[in-house]
Image (cartoon, rainbow, N blue to C red; front, side, top):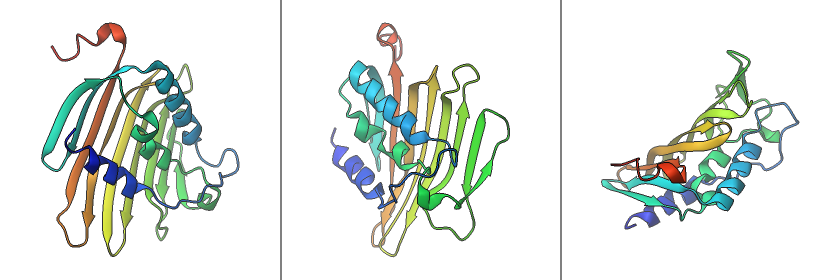
Amino acid sequence: MKFSYGIVIVLGMAACSNPTKEAPAGTYYDLKSYIERQISQLQKQQPTVVKQAGFGDDKERQTTKTIDWSRELDLFLQADINKQAYQSSYQKNRPDSLTYEYVLKPGENLPVKQLRVELDSVTRQPRLVKATLRTKNSLYESERNVWLESNKGAIKHYHIEGFQQLAWLDAKRFLIDGEITPFSEKTLIWK
């Protein structure tokens, strides 16, 4: 891909020096463990992915089995708020027994602004994860909106979009959208 270096820059600049100690069990939903299990499974299975990626005005669509899942899902790992330093930084809401919602409290300055995890009623695994991450300082600003959908606990579709802007340049939009298809369906997707 012509613009893959731009995507790598986006993901690299999105990495923050977040505290790494996890919060006590039960403080927040353990998104990190779920994403790490998915990365491990996807690396073993090497499923077919119909992927669209773009940086600025350049967009490309491809079907591939060659994906570095650790890099591809890194922003979902960054959306994990189950860290000891974050224990009192988020307002918790449970609209029902299958939904976890977290919103950054006023006055807090952390990259994850909000996180929503909806569980499947049968498997009790995430069926939907949505998060907004923002970083802003005097040199750099970015926003990343990420979401993924799962079926029976396995990721089927993921989406990352947002912008990055250096203080002296215009904002550049980026997009990554991937649909993981079972082998038997891959020929039916785009015809």
